[in-house]
Image 1 (spheres, rainbow, N blue to C red):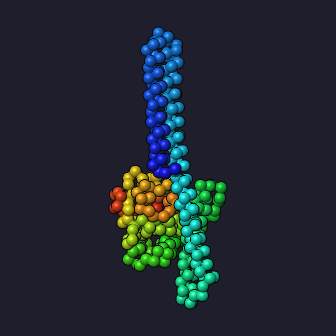
Image 2: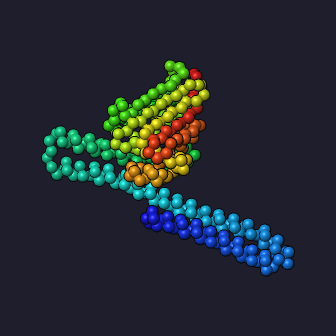
Image 3: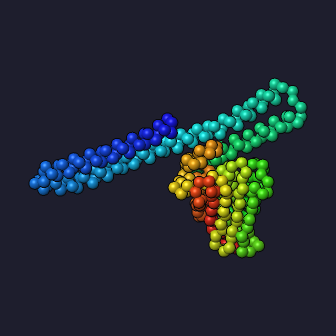
Length: 303
């Protein structure tokens, strides 16, 4: 079903709910006028009336939510299918070329580099889906250990520079620390790396052809460490600031930029940060004015 068809279906259920509620109200008022002398039935009708209205309203809300949820699932399946098929098709094409033609060594090395990059992209998509599944489950227990937040963030930035071919000016790192000792977090290092990498990758992807991203680590007290990822990209409307952390959700403004994604990155960030006892939120002046994602994590006590 096309987006236009989905919007029409949603509007149809909303209108139907309004008409049903209006019909019930009209019938109830007419019944009261006709049978005003029958006090017993009048009391029953007055008590039943709000229950019927509440049932109609809840039914309409449920139908609308189910339609939107199906839309998000369809968009997720399409995005994941594309993210899986594209690198696989690319790797297959290069392998067939290497198999059927005699190429010089520089060209072979170029093909190998492209295939490695496609493999990294494929693994990244698979890891995103697996982490999203883990984020929705509370059954898996993990042993937390002290993690050096400065080292973790700088490692993620180095990986992002390599992956997106960025210079030092495009991705800037800053520190605001009360002491020379970097903050330590009790947590799972792999999960925290995934969360930070998702924030940095999102900032780069939605910054346009000339990214300008600033990552700031702040630790001015003993209880909390703060990480901010600021970009000057497409921005986020005020109505979407909380919705973007939902599973499969992609803001309409983001979708129109045609940036590839599965709608899982920010959901993974929120799940990981919540498991570590922290919180994450987004701020933006509006579309086209960039955005700032702030992560607050409890710092480990000094050893």
